[in-house]
Amino acid sequence: EIVLRLAYLIKKILDPEGSKQSLFSEEWFTCLAEYLLIQQHVQCVRKQVRSLLMLICGSKEKYRQRRDLHAVHSHISNIRSLCGVEEGKPLSCTGLVPVSLPYTKLLVLIDHLKACSDVASGRTSTWQMYCQQNPDTLSALVNLSLRLVEGVVPLILMLLSCALVGRAASSSDKSKSGKESSQVSHGKVCTPLVQLFLDTIPTELLTRFIRTFLLE
Image (cartoon, rainbow, N blue to C red; front, side, top):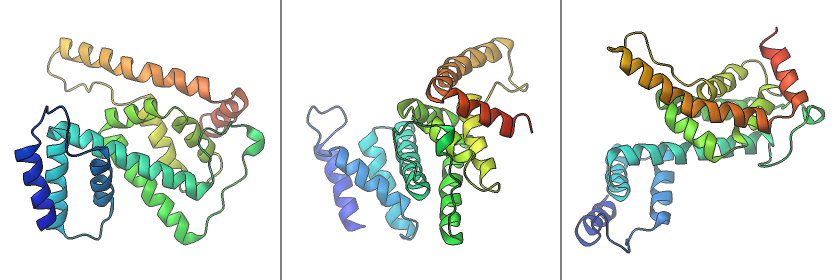
């Protein structure tokens, strides 16, 4: 806690926002963001880590976005590792071997998926940004939806839905112009992701996905 307080003061006094050469490189953010992913640490230390990260990022909004992007990337990497889905590997129906995990690993997988779903449902724009920055994420989720046990699949489908559909303007919006503006913004984000979804998934795999989940 003392070390984190010292780093906070150094950043605040000697390394103000906007300086050309920051004393705190990207490695600082990565290390501190990884620290937040460890749940066992005491609350007062986590608070100091958050304060330092917020100062490094420059604002609360940037901090939350970068924290979520890093967390999602970490969880997706762990999901890939558990299920043996290689990044960038071409997909096909012939490679859809069912994923059989021991009970303990299955629980770990569910925890990773739930962590991603929390971001996807609560801060959908951040999840969509991650999917745009990592184009094979959607195809990997489709692959896993056809290979994992039924109890896990709803979480994966929810992640796909948040990416491709997002959150449309609600009927409780105060003004018509507000609704229209929200719908335009909604379309600008979702349309490229839908196109990415169609471009990165082989036709035979997409056909099987539709038959499994939309025509059952």
